[in-house]
Image (cartoon, rainbow, N blue to C red; front, side, top):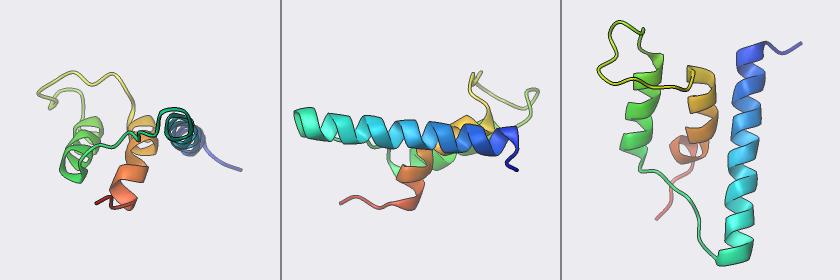
Length: 76
């Protein structure tokens, strides 16, 4: 059985891939975030609330799910 953070990461990753596929089919564009910025956002989401320099509204699992294609795949 999957835990809630795992399911959130899978659902957000699947929705990001579906959105990217739909945009590619309809308009021929893809959404991408540079790997350095994606890594910085994941680190920001993983920090405790007291140490965050900026407020980040998404939990770590959702952030990781949304940015996992950018972290795992390299676009040129």
